[in-house]
Length: 144
Image (cartoon, rainbow, N blue to C red; front, side):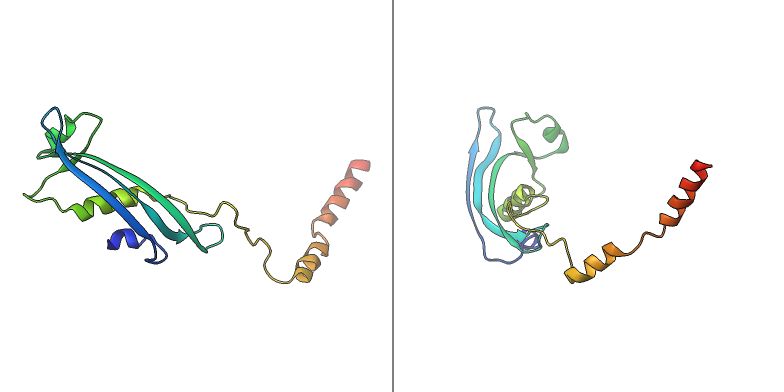
């Protein structure tokens, strides 16, 4: 699954998938299933790998035309058949990509907010404010 893998730090995780094919009460051909597993993504706070637990579900109805897809009940997402065969791996890959968090992060990572030497940061804080002269002029103008 190269598209799914492009969102991950490495290929160390694993995904378990269980898919069922059936016909429902209306005679629609449906795919239902569950995927779960754990993968590593880049934490957007500290840029270190973070383990993400994934849970995804499939609930698709096979349709042949766009019109059938529009008339489909809300309980199913449409799976448009363009050929006589369904490639299952891209369908699973799409659902896994949709289940990834938009912004992965550790719940307890510490963010480095100060860069460089601490003494350098103190010296920059102790420099005089160049606008203090304007404040003094404003005070003199208010007194007159």
